[in-house]
Length: 87
Length: 540
Image (cartoon, rainbow over all chains, first blue to last red; front, side, top):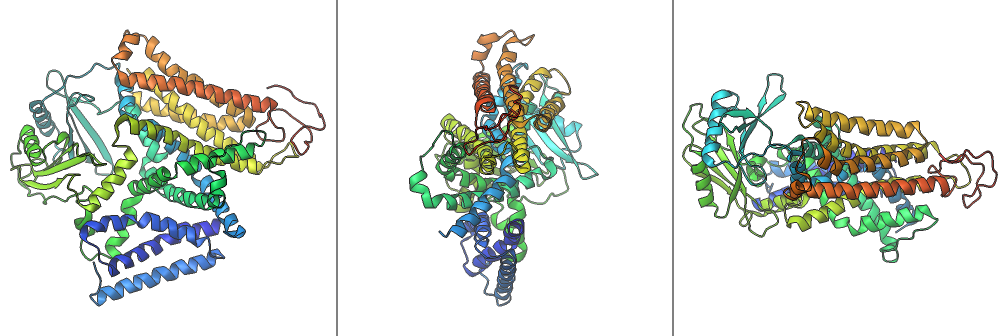
């Protein structure tokens, strides 16, 4: 449980930032909705951390979070380089 | 939901609760008290000679004196707290950054003879209890951040708790079954309090994490996502509008009265309570006139940012016309601080705060009861450890807060008042924890509850019998804040005494084979009754 909880709470942070960042990059919001969108980081963080407990082991959860983080960061970088980022 | 999933989330709820419960108990108990911060401050200061209300001319004189006598003023953000009915007399304050990177606070008032004198906006007690609320007593340098992460665990505990409860929600929602099955009783009360106040707890988990670690968590977005300056995009909505860079040349600033008048014209209905200067004395100095407005929105706070030399309006933050982002953020902050709804909202928050503290305390009790060995007088080491820690930290905190009240009143005339208040709090707090490890846990818990009762009962008594206090009951009537604090202290004393008596009864006559028993016993049957008398110690 300790390993799973450390993975859930810590590795979900970069995954949350990357996932929410990708959403903001893909779906441009009006400037006055930027702050509310960013403040969703806390519910998304808790949601991802809770959902990770559905995975069978801490290793699987860690791998998934790392993959999600790398994938989302990569997509953000790609969108920016192509000039398609909404922010 | 599958049984295995339910078991997983039960474990998540248990461990996040155990991991965060004690710190959150302190945060919620002191937070409940902090709802009445103005009343606490009034109680703490009511023996001090009161200041007279001061006008804007005197505010200007105070500012001029501070600038003339302290060179550190111009380089730092300077706040002028304006005189009002609750805090008569202006106060100018700022933090000076020292060479070693630390900060030194300065605060000055205008004396009766209109000279500069060192002072504080509020007596120490209210500020100390508020600091306990957002640090749980940890050092301020990192306590806020620890509590911020604890709030994320709190969020996990809420979600997992809800998932556990949902399968039987309709059947168990309003059920509380007192009786011999102690575990079921604690579970029922924990569920009822938790589920019925769930929306409030969700708001608190979210807003607390935002206030504590929001900046840390939002910072990565600046580098990962936003090519433009994120602060420029949302800074104004967070009340952090960046002003012009300092020009490096001195220029005459508009008078306080003029600045307030310009702000009031820009935002009709604004009742200013603070002026916040940046680069005071510089040609590009700015001043934010902060106040409250009656717009019927959740957040009453508004501000007008002006150029201090010309009065040019740079930015206006009006809750009635604010952008969505500002409304959302300030709304969440207002919900956190109960900045709406007057006394009704504050009493509701007070009750919910104490109920929240009960939630964490009862969660730990539930864990202990869940692991009770019903046929053995000797319980697990973990049960004893948590029982001692739970009693020591939670009841110790409550006793220590009452002791802090008494210390603040007792050392009112001392230059060491602030320090002694804190020493007494931490002394009683840590001694309480130590007491729980030195004595049988049931006896120590009883002792701490009685101690909390005596200390709380002493609070109103001190007000009436302290030498030099000749106001007595008539004086109380003139200070409603004092009356509220004394009445609540009396109610708390009664509650603590009754809880202590209940713990004593349980220790003597309750189910055996438990950490909460005080007698030495032999083997127990399945109902926790002693079946072999091995030489009862008897009594306490």
